Image (cartoon, rainbow, N blue to C red):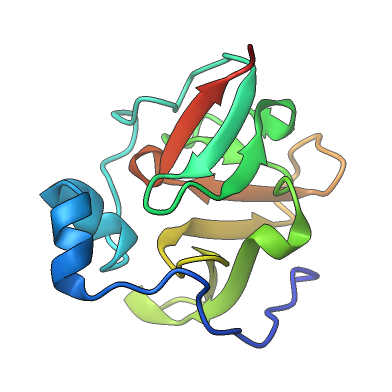
Length: 142
């Protein structure tokens, strides 16, 4: 995969688990802080076409833009590129008996989802950032 994982810098936003639990719902905490996954086809942004910016639900960092969102029909919001290459961290994930690349918010190291490559989607990058809706907050364009 050309999305080569980079060394992980320290998070800019650091909180204890208790502080995160006070800020996030139990479902948000399970996905963002414990690398869980929401069920497919239930997230609020799976099919959203609203123009705007997608921020990290935990810390508010801009992660993706609606102009890079596409319909992959996989059950989760899909983007072909982050808003800024430094907005996310890519890290190897060998859980579930397979090799994947985890996507984290670079500011707070919250789990967002995974990125896949070479699936044949007609996008400029041939990548699918498969992101949990619950990890995001959409700020509609004014």
